[in-house]
Image (cartoon, rainbow, N blue to C red; front, side, top):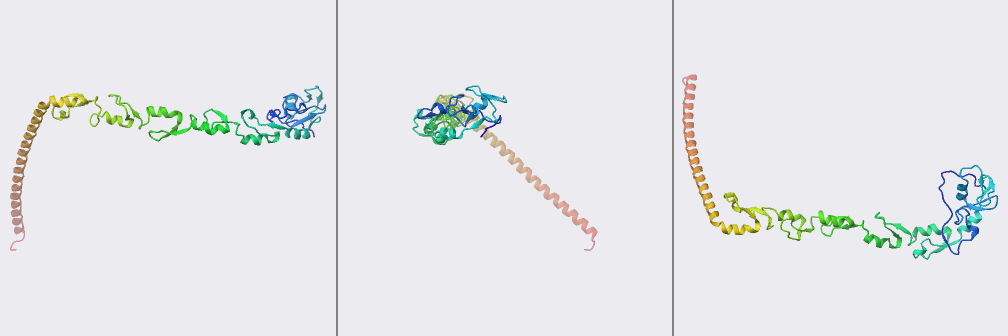
Length: 296
């Protein structure tokens, strides 16, 4: 059967490059690629080649020339498929391509691709796309240490890429213990640092805070750890400030009582004036009514 001229879109292949056991007989080797014949064809001069090797040795020329003895041939009439040799080649015994890595599979060439689909020693890329390549049998072991595996942060539980965990904990994780930037105390959770250094509710000993008596006139400020000593040394001053504050408040109370008393007097005066005005209005109303209805 003539194979004719093949389409240009056909993928470029070559013979079977496998580990034959025993070694490949010369009669099954393609003279062009020196591998086992793939889809063998025979020219009119009796030489066999891989179909694709013969096609590409001809290029785009209308007629071909045998790569062995340079005999001219018409590819449409002088090239024939050799199915008998094709079956022989596919029946040849081979070792697994991954024999060097430990796979002891032996079988016919025709079963090679089927075996490789499940071969435990075939090289596969990491499913996390980290770039690592290893045998299928070791893939699960790699996934346990893969830098792109997903791991939970042991502090906050957030699921992250393993290679990003250290950065997350050092700069982001709110549950990670850090050092106070003011007093250098260690072991403070990042989320608690703001509260630790807060001037009102914090307990950082080196934060500058106001004296608790600042509302009544003490303008002293110092580190929180020094505030107890200030309370002792300024206790008399604080008492004086308190007395002044109490006196001011008493004066304000007296002033407010006076204002309340004045307001009370004003209210009584307004009430009396209102009653007087009401009486006048009532008398005037009676007078007007009598004039409109005499004898009633």
